[in-house]
Image (cartoon, rainbow, N blue to C red; front, top):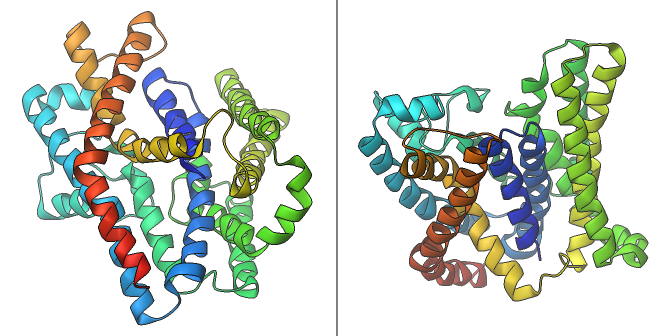
Length: 350
């Protein structure tokens, strides 16, 4: 149902990082948060329930979904760093180098970075894993009932919106609204509200739920991101440009929320259910490994760490995507698929 959408968001992240297209990956990360808010609330309500047994089964399922695949990729990343050397990996992305303390190793193994701004923690074998720290925190909060009913979820939503308003009033900057732990609160709350009002939303949007509308929303996501990127390129700090920047940021919430609503009963354009599931399986390893894939391909082809929108960067991007697909298929069939049966058994016993 959401597999192709997850793959679309993962590819947006890859495009920002390897082709140096600003904003689009950031917008995708908050799209992931909205989707997770919806899905985690759904499974707690329909599969696990709010009990100690439910908490245990939810935790086991999430662990099996996230960590084995990540640890396999972490091991491969470690090999690449050892082969290429830290000088090269850090020149490609400054976060990629070997931990030097037990705390740094623990953070990289556990996906729990000890900072209100996890994206600022160094080192990170897989730089985008800072977002997984935020995901894990809100998984726990949702499990404990922060979205248990509409009333609690509305309190959560308004508290999150108040935080966002405060970031503007106090001029804390974009990082406070994007990469801090508290920045994840609003998109997760939006996703949870979609769950609680899904029936009303489905009824009102039924006449719109078509491939054409989903395609239009995907194009709206891309256009909105590129307009925001053009604003950043202009470096115009006028009040009007600043306002346009903020409007674009929250418009992205609306577009991604509408995509989630449309895909609850609809489907991604030109993608059947089987392909949708396959694309969903590939999205997580691709998200985790694309930085190291880009570095490895660049070194093999050009002998130096390159990325960007030059012809060399574009060739590197294509090669990295192919390498990610190969690795993702391997991870899916060797690591994730065997564990999927275990996860299904955990769900069935809930």
